[in-house]
Structure formats: structure tokens, C-alpha cells
Image 1 (cartoon, one colour):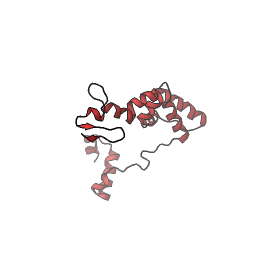
Image 2 (cartoon, one colour):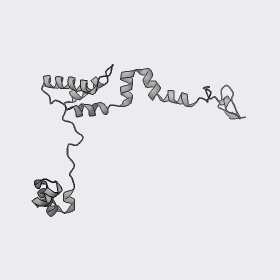
Image 3 (tube, helix red, strand yellow):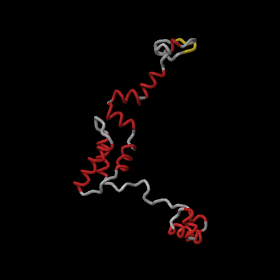
Image 4 (cartoon, helix red, strand yellow):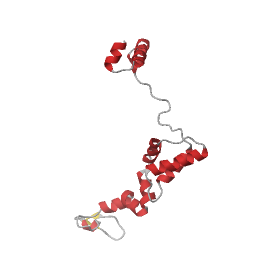
Length: 150
């Protein structure tokens, strides 16, 4: 077994564990098991809110600056210090629309995410004039009614 493990570049203990799992459970015994805590952070909720708040500040802070500030505060309060990857994952998980609103302001948010703005742009002709019932051939309108075929 040691020779085969060495030839394949596998640690001997790993090969022994695989063999034991195979003998006990067959092929299903070799399937990796999912971690119970996958996707869960061991982070104080207050620290997570702090990281999110720092990420929404204006002007925008880099992930490295946010990590340094969050680490300093965590140490001061006796909390576990978050890794850079954890801080970066929290920042990435923020809604892009919320980040745009917080950092670029309501005008930029409206231009990028507001459905009314998108609809207004979609209802314009190539020349830039708005599409109205009158501009559609074959339709006429009266003051208090819906467009009626004319």
C-alpha cells in the first residue's frame, strides 16, 4: 500500500482511510461529506452589520481598509477577528442596487435600477420622441377614453 500511495502522490494515511471507508461502506463511503456549518459564519452579528455599513459608506472603501477597521474593532471588543475572505464575502453578498444607492446616490440608482426610468426609455422612438397613441398609425384617442382603432 505504501508503494502505491507514494507512486500516486497520496499520503499513506489518506490511502489507508480511503481503503477503510471502501471496505466499510463500498463506493458510497468514498463520497465527500458536506460540512454541517457550510455557509455559516462564526461572526458576531454586530460585527457583520459594521462590515456592511463600512461597505456602504461614501466614498467607497476598499475591502482591505474595511478588513483592517473590522479587525481593530473585533480585537477591542474581544471578538473573533474575521478573515479577509470573510469580509470580502460579506461585501460581495450586498445587493448591488443598495451599494449603488449608498455610494453613487439616488440619481445614479434611478438611472440604473428604476423600472419607471427603464420603461420611459423603452417607450421612445429612434428619434427620441415619446411613443404616444397618436404616433401609432391606425389609432385615435379622445380626451377621456382609451385608444380606439380608427
